Image (cartoon, rainbow, N blue to C red; front, side, top):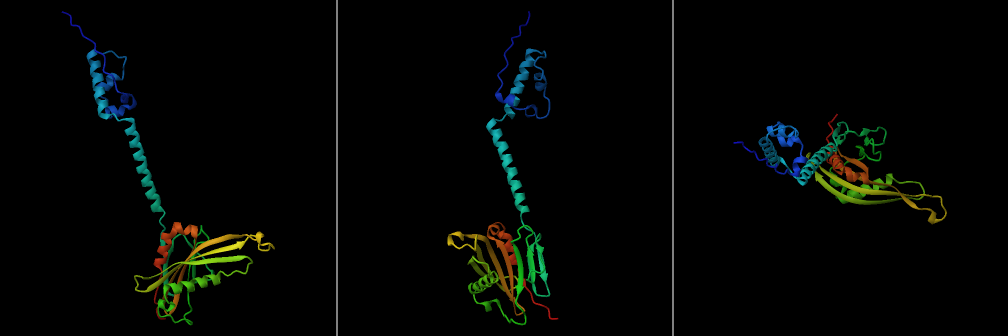
Length: 278
């Protein structure tokens, strides 16, 4: 008796089968079902054809993912990579500090490594930012022959010391140009005892300079004041060797917001030291 084989139609394939590449279906190994279905025109028994489709459908079910899940996976990977890059960039933005020690005059501090020293600027030592030319630091101290400070409290309270510091700044910035006006304010004052056991005063002031665009104009309406510069000045005061030492930091206000953490590290690093008797 002849055996009649009934050909059954293959089960329908999900859309995910056509979207996923072969490696998701075979995990890098060519399975028998994959070899059979790679050649749809090849001849084979109906049993083999049914087995092929059944195996492939089962494999697809194990590895298929929806389009929404795939998009979410890609987006998550992208965001994680962006976070890592942001952290790396932030770590690179931290400024490396270098220590400056003056054993002859009795003080030390740390400054940004890329700042350059400028000689002949009038202060005992002067550094400035090579890119932001309006940003700099300097150290000055009173003459040992004309001062006899015992402690920083000889200046009074931090608030009283701030008034003296601001007055000194305004005196130095006094201009003989016509139409120049300065506005100033004390932003903060504080005192702290450092790890060397000495007390230091910290003073922050803001000074703005305005100038007329046409100082020789006769009519007041033709003399319009414009902002020349807006700076923050940070001073650290300390006493040693009967002298008053002052570390000064100058920076534009719009730069201070970005570099505040680094500038405060410089302020906190300032120390006055005992000069060895010669």
